[in-house]
Length: 262
Image (cartoon, rainbow, N blue to C red):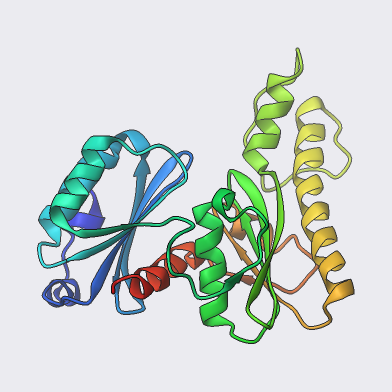
């Protein structure tokens, strides 16, 4: 039984009586994330495996009967049953390139711009107005997205994430094992496993620092945001000054939800 849905505190109870709360649902490649916002305040959040998303959606409907609005961001697949349930219970806005957004999109192929990246840049535009912002999302993939101080989104880069790099070493070679990231490892790997850890983790760290330095060569004043599932794992390894915020995408989706209510 999820604490997200059933451990109801007094503050949460009163929040449920409000009509200006938003349900945020982010369907990623491996996980489905749920969040409740009261205005711009994150009240509760939880995540589950995608196969459990329907169950969690039903509990969400039961636990928050006063909620009316939902924004849905889908990178991965979403079942028709779950979408139908949400539309029966809420006014659902499905995020897409047609959504109202708080920035000027200069991406040459806006239709192909991922909804997760749209949400991240929306958060940057709202929280850091008139600033150059580089948002780095370290998840299944590592994405780099740049917003200018003139509120123009120029694009960025997409690279394999940490787990994907481990998986590729295992999948495309005959004898390398499938590993998970490790916090402590030797720079000079003295075994196959330690060499893989060194190569993957240091490769990601050097890549991120290198990309940041390239941006700093063009823009002297720049705010760096690190988010995603591996953000806190990477934060203290990077040489550049950054702001780590694991809720950046959820906050961006909430901002977009407010913009698209009318």
